[in-house]
Length: 123
Image (cartoon, rainbow, N blue to C red; front, top):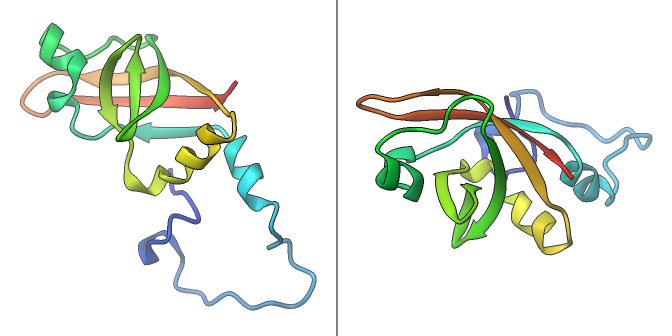
């Protein structure tokens, strides 16, 4: 999974980066990230609308969208399914600049700690 640029030290390898003058660390990397597909394990699934309303998790194959509802969440219609980890907070700026994201539930499990894992891509 791993993401880059979240601002957390745990997202970076222990190898210090050096600038040799020919790198591709220019300012356009933000827009490149907005167009990248990603997979994610949603957080706090049991606390979100879908689980509260249906007492279960969405089945694999269910379509999801990304929305900003105070925090970035995966939604089915108007029901939130789970929160995206904070390492994906960069997507808020992507949404604000016009990107939209559609995904599909790849795996889900019910039980003591409901879980949803999904794949997303920019539309």
